[in-house]
Amino acid sequence: MDQQKVEALVTRIVGDMAASFSMALGHIGDRLGLFRAMKGAGPVASAQLAAKTALNERYVREWLKAMAASEYLDYDPTSNTYVMTAEQAYVLADDASPMSAGGPLQFTAPTVANTEKLLRIFRDGGGISYSEIGPEVPEGIARFFGPGYLNFLVQEWLPAVDGLPERLKAGIEVADVGCGYGLSTMTMAAAFPASRFLGIDYDAGSIFRARRVSAERGLHNVEWRAEPAHLLPRDRWFGLICAFDCIHDMVDPKNTLRAIRAGLADDGVFLWSEPNASDNPLENRNPVGKAFQCVSPLHCLTVSLAHRGEGLGTVIGERGVRALARETGFSHVEKLPIQNAFNQFFALRR
Image (spheres, rainbow, N blue to C red):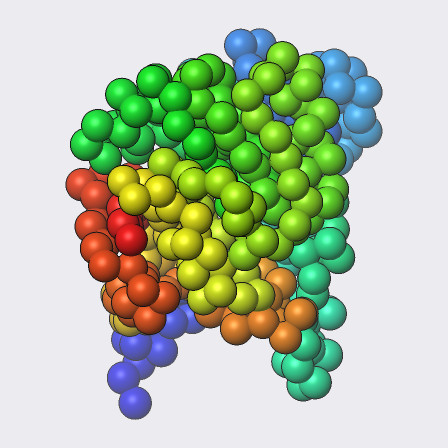
């Protein structure tokens, strides 16, 4: 037995334990407005922050110590005060930031809270439906992906497909399958008013929210359907169909892909993103790959298996994308040259 390997593994486990606790406390800070209260406030003592947020000082004091130990906040031992730097605020207290961690904080702890349910499911099979994973999780997912849509979708992702922005400006039919809260759909609809957009997702709660928010924003070129993604309209031809980080979650991904292919116009393109990870577990020994692979049984796998779905899991990798595309009849698959820490992007044609 190699003692150094034993010690390295134990150290890694303790580090993961600490990270889990940090994320749980980070979620508390995010939910209760502690991070937002510290943004731009300068050095603060625990009593000041507790008064500002109307929270219990003793808990706030211990939370601040933990966040300083986790390097989420800075600490001055001379004055016994804590400060949020501009960089920390950019990550922890700004949902519009491309580096916002609000989504991961809101998604992680509630997802881990489903562990008790999964103990039974590991024995008996089945899963946890998306509608039963808890209200925090869909919102956390929207916050996780929202900054990408806001900062990169129109600016970088769509232009990676030759001629696509020009076609969107001129006006085409667009479908956004598995749209969730519809943030990607609304971002495109606002940028390209001459095009018509359809957001489709089987989760009625997400579509209800998307419909309300789009009405508040005065977006008249978007419509919503609370239906499974494979039920795309048969009487419309789409110049663009998008599926951002959702095909692997689906109950019936192959029929969805066939419906997408059938719904494309002759010159249409399917823009498909998947997590930036590999189907080889050894290649996921990095923070991003590890996060996506470990979340799979806790979320992506179980929401599919809850309905006796295919259960692809979070990580299908480029090989999985190409295999599914080939099986469902697509003639062309191009991996787009988009540099993104979390996603890889593909353009498919009929």
